[in-house]
Image (tube, rainbow over all chains, first blue to last red; front, side):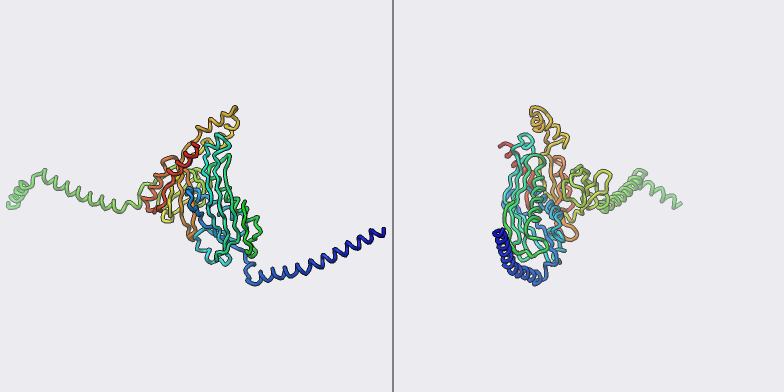
Length: 192
Length: 195
C-alpha cells in the first residue's frame, strides 16, 4: 500500500517535470510561427496556382497526351479546393494575383501501350507515364517536388493514363504537408 | 423621203441577224460583269460549311466530355454540337495549333466489354482482337479571352481528321513546326503490339 502510493507520487512528479520541460520549448515555437506569419503578412491571403503546359522533355510523347494531362490537371487541381484560384498557362489575370504558385510538370518516362493488347492479353500493353511535378513560387523557389505515376493497365483507352496521372498529382498536393494557406518553406520531395 | 432612204441604207448596213447578235453580246457582257461582281462579295457570306461526326473527348469550350455530335467549321468558328443541344464554339482566330494523331479503340462500348468478359473459354479475347477500330484524334490548342491556353481533343473517323485540319488551315489557322504524330504514333503502337 505504501509502495503504491510512493510509485504514484513519483509518476506524478515525472509527469509534472515533463510538462514543465515541454511547455517552454513549445511556446517559442508558437511565437516563431506567429512571427513568420505576421512578418510578411501574406499567409492570411490564400494561394492561387497557375498550371503550366506539360513539358515532354526529349520524349516522343503524343501531343494529345500533353493536352490531356494539362486539361485533366486543371480540372483535378480545381477539385482539391486547396487554392483560391486556378489559372491556366498564359492567363493575364494571374499576374495580378499576389500569392501565386506555378505547377510545372515534366514528363520523365513514357511507355506507350495498346488498348488491343490489353484487351487480348490482360497482363501486357499498359500505358505508363512518370512525371516530375513541381510547385514553385514566382521567384523560382521549389515548394513541393514529387515524382508521380499514372497508368492504365486493364480497361480504358490510353488517354485514361493522363486522367489517372492528373488525379495522382492533385492527391499528392492535397496530402502534402504544404498547405495552401500557410507559408511554403519546406521542400518536399518524394515519390507517389 | 430622206428619212426613208436613210432607214433603208441603215437596214442594209446592219441586217437583222447582226443586230440581234450585237444586242445579245451586250446583254451577255453586262451579265458577266454583274456575275463577277457578285463573286467578289460572296465568299465571306455564303461559303459552304464543313461538318463531320466527331466524339469530343475533352477540353472544348463547355462541351461535355466523351459526347458525340457534329463538328463543323462555319462563320469563322469551329463548332461542336450535340444532337438537340446548343453548340459550343471557338473562333478560328483563337486557335493556335492543330495536331493529328491516331488511336485504336474497341467498338461496342461497355456492352461489348461485358459480353467479352462473359464469353466462355476465353472467346472474348478473340473477339476483342477483331473488335478494334482505328480513329483519328484531332488535338487543338486555343486561347480564351484572358489569354489562358486551352486544349481540346476530338476523335473522328479515320481520314476525317485530315479534312478538318485542312479546312482549318484554309480558314487561316497557322500550324506550328511540330510534326503530326499520326504516323509516328501508329508506328509506335504497331511496334509495341508486335513485341
